[in-house]
Image 1 (cartoon, rainbow, N blue to C red):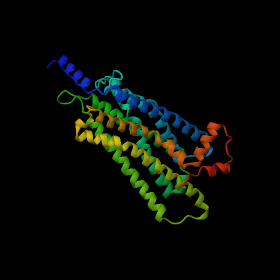
Image 2 (cartoon, one colour):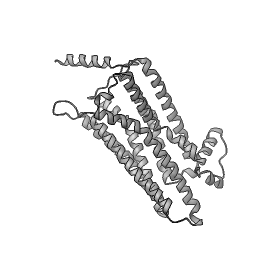
Image 3 (cartoon, rainbow, N blue to C red):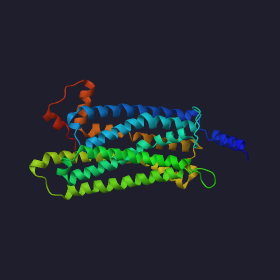
Image 4 (cartoon, rainbow, N blue to C red):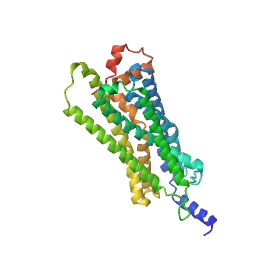
Length: 325
């Protein structure tokens, strides 16, 4: 079969697998709304953490700010790119993905780089919480440089992973083709499971320390209680993020063992794919909601930011910083 015949056959296959725009439009509206909410809420969150003096401290708050910036970038870059790719499966607009194009490979990398950075950030936060629980004195006086170097490593890991994926995507296979997409899926699953393992070990050790450790004395009671409440809030953030990524991980696993499942040849498969994608993008949306539910200081900061209220004094700020148990 000639190259022209191959292209014609591919085009026919793509046309036959298109989903009607009536099926796509509601999901496109949902995803656009989700991206707007992600950007707005996380920008507000960043502003609160940057303006509230008590939330400018070192420690977990440095990683929280990095996680918030990652979510902003996901809403600005990854979300719109995901919406663009929906055109591959419906006739809302023309979309063509060329796996031999450097531009398309880079765009494909930006679909996932922020989720990898977010997962790495969650793993680092869990490790930081272990250090704060078992070595509170050393944690209190740890240099900011350690946190900034760690953040650089988080982004370096994500960049290296995506660069590796691009390199593999350009390498020829023995049959003249390219490295299959299954490698990307397998790496993503392995990465997710590794982060899940680290998070489970860290928060289990924190629970053991809190439940069975020695009682606090009066001098350390306030500081340690705030750290424990912050750990509980960050645990909720981590669990929510892992849950939002679970549908897409399940979808990827099904695609590895049943390749036909991920080809949206029917509206049912397309809707399952869009549900997984919506949950995937919502990973960048849940954090500000949890902060608002569990952190009194965060709610106070949002109110001051939106209503122009005067900042509380130092004592009130310290009290408001305590998260709700």
